[in-house]
Length: 455
Image 1 (cartoon, one colour):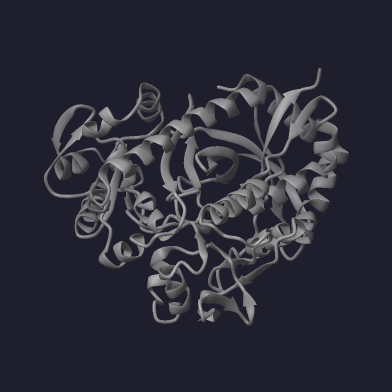
Image 2: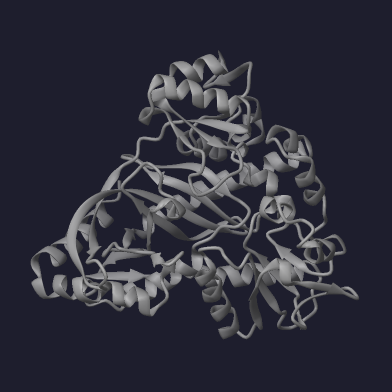
């Protein structure tokens, strides 16, 4: 699929296998480096894999073209359907009320991430994180740490590596939304907003450090601790111009009374919130049911249809009745029940692998019970993606120590391009030994780097 990266990976693995000094250095220092740079998630090490994911410029360009087409198609669906889209993706009344608020800028999801699995022949995009795409600050810092490692420095004697700049694009997007919303401050104050007890709190502070290094005053705060008085949102007396929202709409709604100052500021457009609440219908997993609907294909250009056909698996909301599948009409519950080995069912609005039913890992009886649960709730069913397992060196930690043992294993690769204003910059790259590749479910993250042979 990518001959340049295949050759680069072979060279990298040869270094790790054949150079005892480099392998020993990894075993002795790998976890210490992670800890020194705060690369943790909920108290555990974010990364235990001793190789970055390597992507050639040509393949990166192809990924950018495909993601651009998919994202354009999603925005066309949003424009064509209007509030009808809210019905089709099963928006709740309280979500609709917030989605109707004017953010002051055009795009519903200026910060997004298309989540994909690497397959034997390509990439399959299975979800759109249109609401709070996490991991970009982790990705930037992981790249910094890896580029300092002796094995990576030795590797660069034959191969040129280039990191992505997701932090730069993230900040530019936040400021771009603020300017579009007629924000006047030369250096607007940014608040990274999420609940105090989330496992990604470390990453929020990474974002703060970067924003401040670029001249933008930034704080990290819990939305329950905000104040809204005289048309100004603040935290402990500090004014806030931009809210970089790192929690989901449903997480806000669960504590509606406690976060009222933020909601009031949003209603009165006293602050610029990114992403806006109207991103919610795009974030629902059922957006891919709309995107792959036979009846919607006339909206799209030839390139957009090709991108959807080749890279987005068939998806439908789990409901009673009939549905189309590749031009044919089927009884949906009967089809789902009869094709367990080819299907996965997922909650329409969850994350971290919660509530996912993987048909090929269940018995017929378990699948039937899962279908009954999905029909009684808000779920989507999606065609199975044949994932490719790739070899990576892994450091197995010694108990109670930062030292570890090096071994090679095969892992599922979840390669998730970040989409800023409709254009790709960098990846969240997760590795997992299981079919679920969510960091919340125990997977690990590695940096992705562009790789080219040196002349």
